[in-house]
Image (cartoon, rainbow, N blue to C red; front, side, top):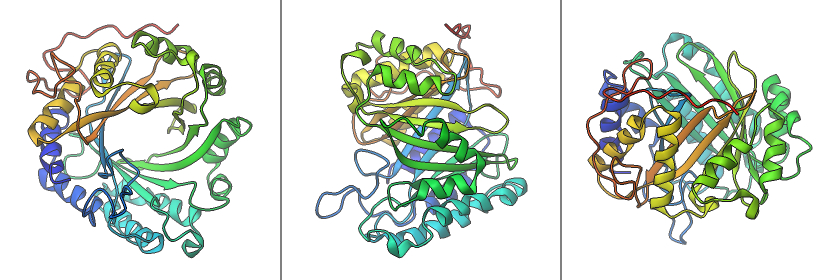
Length: 377
């Protein structure tokens, strides 16, 4: 975690230049307060965010030949607290403080964020005391909102107690719609839920499931519930030497209700689930960014930030969105402290600074030729 401030400073200079560095620093300090070390004395991770236990993961995203120029990360408050109740209380307090960094419209709507833990954990004392995961927070900074947060997300653990998903469905119609769409798919295990708000006060809701060792056919069924085509993911992975039809793997599936759009699904693929070593995972991330972001400027920015921060960083997860109507939508690339390469320019097996490449407002990578977005199949 000691390297994260330098990482964020470098990443902000590439993806959200003009953001107030004091705001970026203050938000991270508050969101990650209470961290001491990545593992407990008995070797357990203090956070479920990353394999290493360090509670920080950054990401970039883009779709159809355009990059979303923003600094995004997930972190966790009070990871040194061993017991669920006090940890949850500290995390709820941090969430309220972080909402204060939103612009007025975002702050006005941010009460819904606090509703997530209140709905999931109506009686914190009933949750097993040693349960590690209560809440994590997601942060978004954009150059268009330089002195405020551009987005704030809260993630809550659906496995910490009984009946949480049902309570969420009663509280939010969007959660009920998402849950009902896949309620009969027994291979999807509910893991966590998300409520998020942007600077304008628009809300989004998400449910994350983990597949119980599902194969390609099962993923195709889930994708069709939202009008997507899982063949697109299978095709992408096949090119990287991963055959979904060859066995059953455990992936994360995100069912999302974004503001103003139809519900959609995405698959989030870890290196472990794909059976890829760090270099191969970084190479796959770079190839997907090149094809679906229109260029590699965003993943190059991740590599430059990792190099500036020092220490070991690795590509942890790749997310592939399947929008209604087919094709590949957004592609997310996630990196975290923990060793191994991030997708660097010139050599995906090493974390080296890429050539300077900014991202202009609107998503055009500075100095890079734009590619036409791939045609849906």
